[in-house]
Image (cartoon, rainbow, N blue to C red; front, side):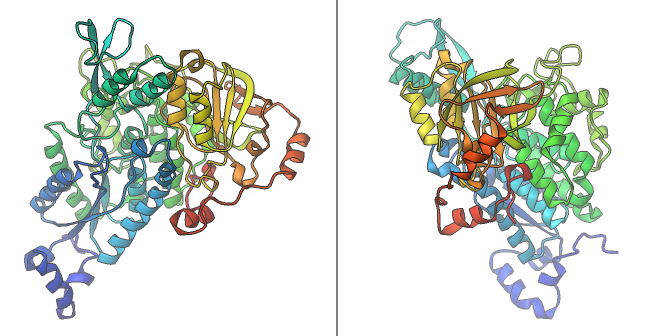
Length: 576
């Protein structure tokens, strides 16, 4: 039995016939002694395009230090990433979900090509984290996903009227508040509505992102980082240290040491990511008010492991799991506050105390989730992670609706609002851009239902996220608590009210959402889990017979390849 952990890389580095490979590796600085040790790949999603991944080279250096100290040889390589926040509201946003598949594929290719003994995937944004976990599951060699960490909150000074103060407001009395990138998108809507001016918008823009790190609220990045901890594939508590925390370097070094324990023990992702740990991750998402994108990503991860997981599982778990984390965008606090309050160990303890987790699957720390929860340290007086005497909601933050508009289901985020029923007039748009223009032009009325279609996995392609639209609506007071939205694309962050995303089947594939006409009425019924177009099934079928889906927007390249191979959102939008 090989106890060193060098179980794969021997074929690359050992024997006289491998002299050519060794010569090339020695040419970039690896010594003969380095090459006799277990080789651990470091998949780094570093980029200088945006704050989420900007600092990951420094994290990689700390991880490599930990690996070397623990007797391994790290070899770092890079893969691509797309910033959702930067591309939001543009054609470039179509690249975001597509990048998840490219990231998983590229990590797989480099790892298989180089026969690594272990793998650390360093990720810091919405799609590179699930992409990294998908690659780990597919490769099934010892490894982990390490989160780059959340950004610090921005600080904005607002006046007595609640509006931003700028340098053009001398002598004004104000107070400082914490903000996130969501605040910028909301300010864009307020600016379009004429309620703030150019200088006030600039004050928000200049304050929202004070340095490196992923978007601060419980958006997709922090949701998937938490999910990784509950899955067991990320080191709990270490991975949640914020990006610019003085503790981040040491936490990353410890993660490097941990991966060498995994390599020597031969503990593989297939032993960590199980049906039980997937359900634990879903429970954490529901209890924390996490992003709807977790539905797509966890189903995709389960698919890599050949474990059945469906949208119905999310609804079942959410129904029994109260919402107890008061985090933006639905609540008050950001990821740094969550970590400072006690982090995922504390949330795990809360859920285990209520019997809402399994907690027995091994994790990359070498301990079960239950054992890690026993080490929870709650900060006295913290108000982020509530106890069971004071839940924010009696059920979780996600709901799955079905009905004649979504036979395969759609996802609604109910954290942050109280509307359980809504019937309104359909305003139909065949792209996100058309809807955004209507919002900015003041053509949307209270109680309308905005239908954004042909933005699904195939039709988009890539399921653009509608944060530009939803945040703009939140910036318009007369609309923010009255309109509803549904799309075959994605919603995640905004919290003004009812949003049904991932409507499946999508319009491009002849889903019922393609049959909606301007002036129809649509009903959301949260308690009964229904989303219905208020016409007969016969009329829907007749309308669909007359509809010819538009030609795919891209005929060549990666967008075309994706459109031709992607599955339904209800199946995780994975490619075949």
